[in-house]
Image (cartoon, rainbow, N blue to C red; front, side, top):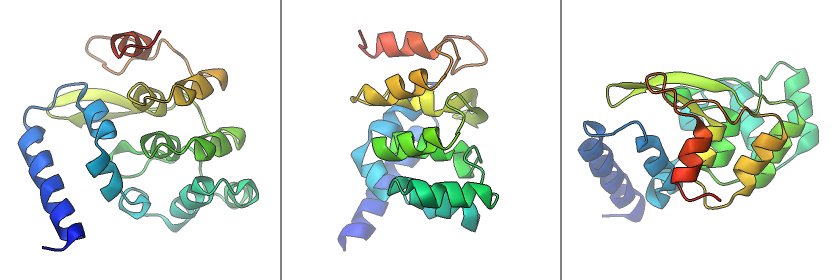
Length: 171
């Protein structure tokens, strides 16, 4: 079996086995999975050509191209497949320069998207994904650009993202 096929098969098994038992923090575990991250492609999440071009330009931190695309109508806060936003993409893919590029271009640092995973409603945001990152610069940058630390990941419990950060060992 070729490597990409093997990776896809392993990923499928992981997703199928975890789907029914994924709890409210399951997306943190997905964000941490290097196998999952390596299989992620922006075209799977951003179907619109302008959104995809924006994500690719931000990934390279091409600030001029990002600004040109925004002026042409690309929305830095656009929501793609699986509640993915360009900012969340940069956090999940651990692209700090891309995150900074989008924030400087005006992306909303605490944009939340409601979705359902594993039978539970939750709010997904770049800020909530940043909790899972070992590099504290992601959360720090989002907070410095105005993200609200009291945002909740769960519409049920109302637990703020900062509480999750503390549980994750942030000091």
